[in-house]
Image 1 (cartoon, rainbow, N blue to C red):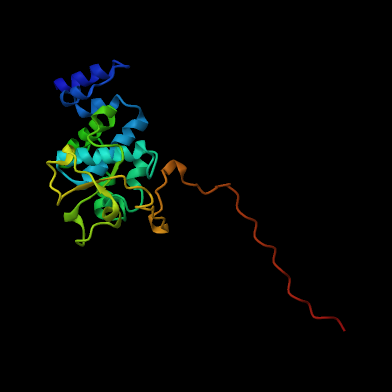
Image 2 (image 1 turned 60 degrees about the horizontal axis):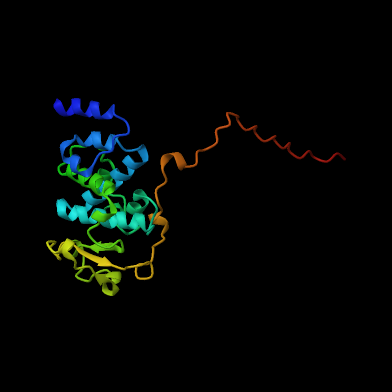
Length: 228
């Protein structure tokens, strides 16, 4: 009850910025409501992405920074939504499946196990200053060996530069490996009709309803026999 009261008080104080240190003391929905609607949507897409990759907070945080690096360098998209839905980048979003439908259905109010943790980490990374970046902005790739269907790494990983800084020292390399300086030449974009980007509902073309019934074609009279 106290959290709800505190939430209404904070929502009434427009213009107050929420520092990262205060995130742990606020109801999550309060912190999200301080953001503009577009930013709230961006945080939601970031949370969906990291939730789909792992349930461990230390790994979720690093994955979130990879996504942010992509957005800020305009690699595979200009927004978090575009980056997350880029074809063949984040496996949970590649093809229609029950898991994909479930992840896309998650909202800030969802109570799925671990979801609120992912949402909080996404908000934390989204709002963090650039100085909090755990690795260079050019670290924009990772893969999970234990999630691969084969023992072979992705082609771009064979030519990329593994990142081995302090930020990933405690990460099990069989779970996640991060890479620096992988560009579009090493990892070319895939364009397939079956992986076309989803359009927001408001951008989809709508059929024109003119309210008129087309006039039926005039019947052609049969040929009359020629007169003698």
